[in-house]
Image 1: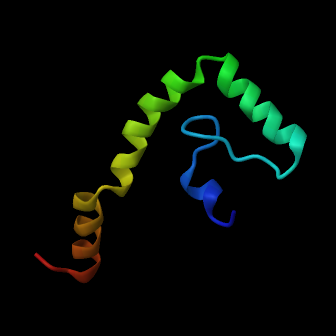
Image 2 (image 1 turned 45 degrees about the horizontal axis):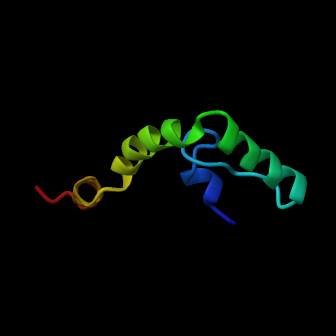
Length: 67
């Protein structure tokens, strides 16, 4: 999906893999066998702060020079 790799840090909060069965299977196996759900959860909580409304509005205000 276009743009997905820019907002999903691969191996930290999700997987960005090729669109083929082997690549998808490898990602699923890694997710299920390497304790990834717990690791991803912590990283997702941190990563989603980038997209929180207060941060978004602060960035817009900064660009628009609104005090």
